[in-house]
Figure 1 (cartoon, rainbow, N blue to C red):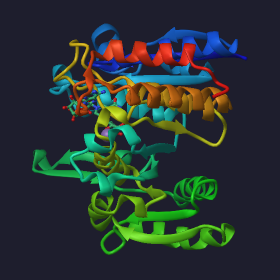
Figure 2: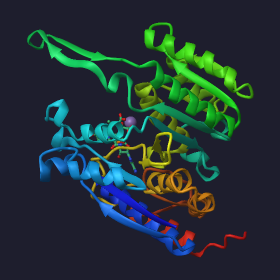
Figure 3: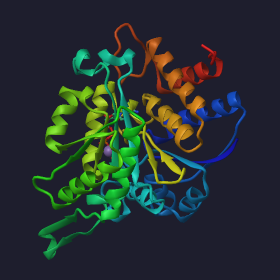
Length: 361
Ligand code: NAD
Ligand code: IPM
Ligand code: MN
């Protein structure tokens, strides 16, 4: 199969983990006789530095023509002083919005080999396997007005949703739950927010179309607590943009590190943008310390969701599990009697594992 992939390395550790993702895609192409072509484009702080904007037109055009997009990370202290509309993060928000990537899938699975890498008790973490379905193109991130008023003495951010925006993400979550363990937790703040009350009504309406899925509603503060006290109680979580952002970083603790969480930002057709959940990690950038596994697992999501390459995706995930079973890890993970290696060495081990493993096992 021929596929064209746009790479958006971005800032900080973004280019390091994008390199790992690209090597994995090349290894998959070689092993399964696919042809993947690559094109790199700028986004975020690096695009501000070279082109004066966080989201250049060329980047948008390239993304619109691509079969899939991989993004490393954007942002960093160098650009923190810039006004909101000029920040690196605007590049990421802009491409999500322009491509209408309204559904952000963030699977959180505790690898057996990493049960002790989490600061939580292993018996709490064991068996955790949940999917956060985060609304990605609405809510507080995009609501208007968002401004400073009255000579800078007042600020406004707006949490706005159109009914159809809630309906499509809720449908996506039900579809996901249907092919998993058939349990959906809708997370909101319906005791305070009008938007959450509409969200709840829509979930109640839609549940009749999915009778095999059990549904519960949970307030976001309680959900944050339950995620770390009883994570196995969750299967699919559906929630609005900002709640999903916060809960997914929290949920990464179950896996041992934020450097383990992949994500897919998709819409109803097959096009998608695949990105690790973590940011540009300025504290470790340029030191070859970044954990490449979130990026590599995002490649597995690309293979599955955009290219329907189920077998290839499974083999990428298996290669990650196999290398962890050999106790190789980066410094963000603590594994007793583990072998601490650099990010590039860990990526190389996983790529070699994919290239040499026997798929008939
Ligand atoms: P961050 O996710 O970059 O880092 C949080 C902590 O996790 C840091 O200690 C970092 O070293 C560690 N970490 C993150 N990824 C890691 C990896 N792969 N391996 C090892 N350790 C890892 O969050 P932050 O520090 O709050 O934000 C830094 C910048 O990144 C900000 O400018 C923020 O806006 C941006 N950001 C971008 C994205 C994105 O591009 N998708 C996501 C989150 C944050
Ligand atoms: C993420 C990030 C982004 C978000 C930022 C960088 C805009 O935190 O992808 O989780 O909040 O969506
Ligand atoms: Mn985030």
